[in-house]
Amino acid sequence: MNAPLDIVVLISEISEGREVSSRIYRLIAEHYASLPREMSSRTFKDSIVLADLLSRLYTCAETYFLRIARFFGNGIDPDKWHSDLLKRMAGPIEGVRPTVISSKPYAALDELRRFRHFHRYYFEMDYEWQRLEFLMSMLEDAWVPYNSDMDAFVTFLRQLAEPPPAP
Image (cartoon, rainbow, N blue to C red; front, side, top):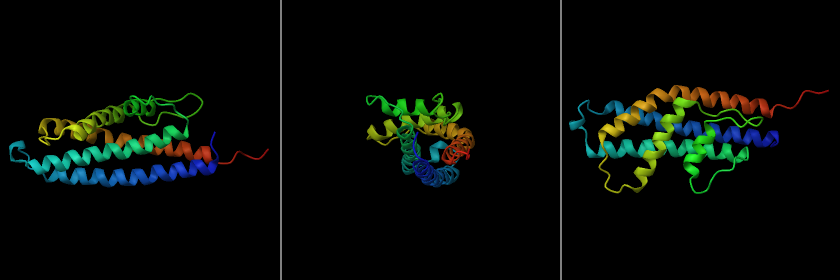
């Protein structure tokens, strides 16, 4: 197991990442709320902004998930590490760490992961509003449970960092 200082550093990295992801989520929510209700009235630029923010949100979460995986020595298949990493976060490692995220956040993040891949390699930038609406719906439903899961995981890390009681 890693030393308490290493755990404190991991907590700090997770906290920084969560602050950034919260800012991105607020931007997403603000942008989405400002869109016209009628999809036909929405602009090409609106879809590009929303797609970019959704992609950034996933990348931010994936970054601190990778730090968690490395900290706990979670081997990840290099050929499919993006999906493997997310799966690892959705399950406990017996005797090492609890689950990082529950099923609802996992499902939403997995959709965002797939979308981020599409976003990176789809050069036309003509995003389907139905797909963006679906992603927003999943994200909105998963945001509160995601934050609760992350709070619980950070609490676990803080307990790990506590020195053992004196004999």
